Length: 354
Image (cartoon, rainbow, N blue to C red):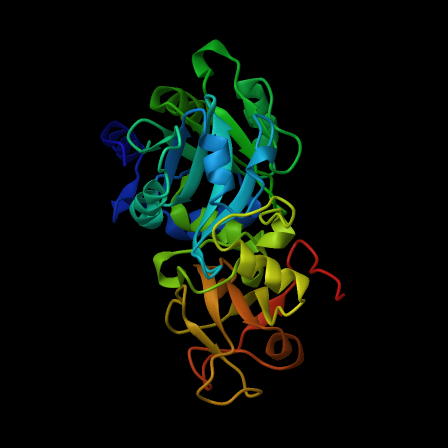
């Protein structure tokens, strides 16, 4: 985390743990605000890689599952970076900022992703840089988020995944991204001083919160995140990336494309991602196994993708599970006697069977 930005947040009351904002001394009310309040959130627990150079688009087109050509100054996309077997090494949000392509991903995966991508640069005229020390990101959400940000910045993206660049002189260089989900939500990326200005201008009506409420809203929106615990565990369709415009089946070759395309065209998808609630005595973690009476006791019925505390009790989770077990059986967390997952509707529909 940028040292000056960290000091700014701590002056505002942030409690930092493991280089991220844990809370602002009111963790319970902060979590509740994710469902029915207006809030602002530091996004330093996410990292950003900037791809700079004339070949950046063509290079990333050969590495990511989404169609990079469709990422414009007005549009952002999610995608995945896969190994040759089609298993996701990382999930990313791709957007343009200051003329360059940016990949946003969990900070824990930034170094390994950056190192791996650099191995494939060869003669491509591209420089890949960790921009965490020069760029800052915040999230703003709630029923009044769009109105207040319009007042501050002069305009916001209206479409899901839409992007605009702030034009107000003192805020020039801020990139705004409209995120999907039932709660109005936007990300802002830019230079620290400009982001500080927006943070302050939001005022006391927007509660400062830690990382957990933002993670909860990602889960409720059905937006998957790959963490170190789940890297190389899933092909993109297992975490619904094709339903979020994160996989292109027309773009041509990219690393892992053959496996991803074969899964799609043969219609052999046996697992997909579900939203669920679970009451567990221990906090669920990405990668935790799922079991079902419909399978052998030694066979996993799936794995957790993400989990966050829910203000109404228990945990909200995203789970990649065997379709047969999820829709015609029961899923248990941890082992065959573990807590039962209660499935809930995602905010987007599944694909219709062929």
